[in-house]
Length: 433
Image 1: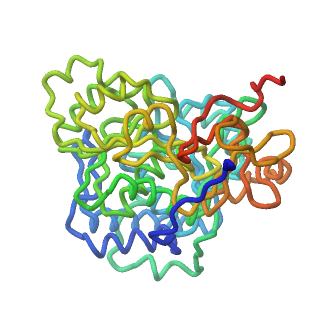
Image 2: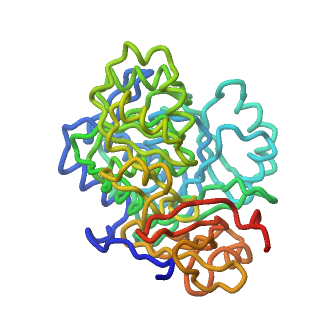
């Protein structure tokens, strides 16, 4: 048997924009809780969140932001990040995610390469003085305006105007294949590349990622993973909004104590993290006296999970239905995922099988031929989830996505007889025998 597999075709893909999907959720669950920022105690129902999203969307349009314009966001996790994500999506602006850990030169590169017109920023985070760094580089970038969260200017742009609706100020139409997000991949070589993603890319990936862990409007997801990354904004936020589930922000950055407190206080049913985050939570002294019995599921991604850690997550965190996901920014991000009833072996030895509506194959990196199952080769994927391309870099896009639409990941993988995949390294590390 060859190393090729195709995901399920049901349920069908969502053929709508992020804004249209968001508004469907608002209409279905107006009074259910949508968003909780634990540190500040702020809460939003879907109707309240929609009001704040629309207020910012109108403010951005009035500030001269139109369809296709790039809006940067440089901030740790906070409610305003989420509100900005949906406000930009509703007006068709392209959100440029900027890593909160960036230094001045990286910030300047991202703003220039993306052509960011307006930047939304936290004043500072941890030891980073964002304002000072922005002052240093903004004059050499196309940025026309900086809005600092919490400033009088921010209050002005986000103020509610009861006499105006978003529909009245939008003079353009949006389509699911429009670009909506640029995420810079921290490539191991050279400058970061701006993976450009559409509504269709990330709306569907968020939807299917949480569909596979049986999300409903009853779920409450604790999101300690960063929003600037797909794990937070796609698998987290879009995973929730497509199902009417509640987004819970435990802290600005990852903090195991804050994560445990959020799970207990908010009765979270799901928890996300990379294995090291779960290890930190399991190792924290607070775990002994926190009630985490509300947890049911979650997603672990980023690196393989040791068997012992998986067993402890199931036994001590109650996430018996935890799922493993694998992917990359360029594929929105998830290509493979385990099922909630897969055994521990599949959840620790593999990254699952092909995601719905996605094709996967393992090929000989030299010839491009599909290898037999059980043999290593390069992991490739094709489907709705493959990015539109790298922003303003056709050559790098052609290197990554071939003429048949297959994304070449550079990851070394093995597809087992059961269709489950193992990621065993990087192609460049492959020993030539």
